[in-house]
Length: 409
Image (tube, helix red, strand yellow):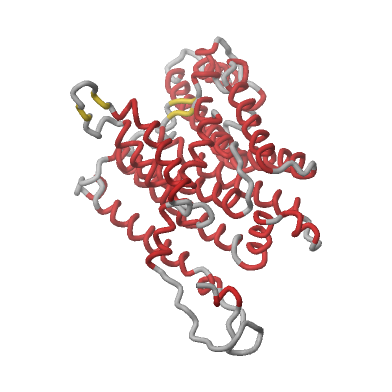
């Protein structure tokens, strides 16, 4: 008998319920409602955390379920941020330029306006013209399309080349890391068209909403991030359930056997790799307007390594584990590196957590890997224990007989 999607995935309903309660509670305690128990800056932190949870789920699907340890998914995250950041910078600069030229003796031509916008944006790197990649930066709709198309096409081409060559394991991880490093080094160049090391800044200033307080904008992005996380969770829960999910997990466990059974392994891997890359880009497009700035350092390989650490700590191979890991590490990182954590004076040495946070994170990763491989999400296994079947008889297919896996203690 075919059960419904929710019946096969009860965690989806519980996750959406918890996310809804959390979103409403944070909104009611924000400065928008006048309560002010949660500051606007912390609302932005929570919104960014939700975006990190979304890319963590994508990483969990590609690694925890499909067995592809990608060390390049944060590159797709950054590309999504760059795509939306281009429109934000263009539209905001256009408003400033038009307002400045409004009192000119002669009305400015479109070319004069465009040249003035280009000079404002690229003057910091010594350029005065728009690069070719900024062709669609004037259009929000087209740039939103670029958020999906550019990372999606990159993942599709890279995945097709890698998977058709049957590159697997650590070699594939190295290739994804090399792709990320190459992209990061290219973006550091001033002639990359994205302002080099300066990156794109002022992204928190939404064009046309200057009169709207940041408290309202932060809540709007917080809700958008929560909605994206909820939809992403449902999408990936659907992907990893049913027949497709069984094939994906089988590829993770024994790729050669799945290929022997007649499945086109490369197509499944390419599908998972591309879809997770697109979702990662959407998460980045929501993250960086809340962060306010994006630069090539955000795409450095170390960021993708952190992402793998989050998933491992939360619990690889379970979607809610990825959310727990990303939220836990992200918020803890903000607390330690933001100066909120008190320093510990040992007499002969003072531990400042801003300097020691990464060491603590590394030790936590090693400890989880060695002593608790199921991560934080594995704690639910201790709470929700599977009942021992009340059956009699020997092993076998007969009704009432014990299956082999049920007979194991």
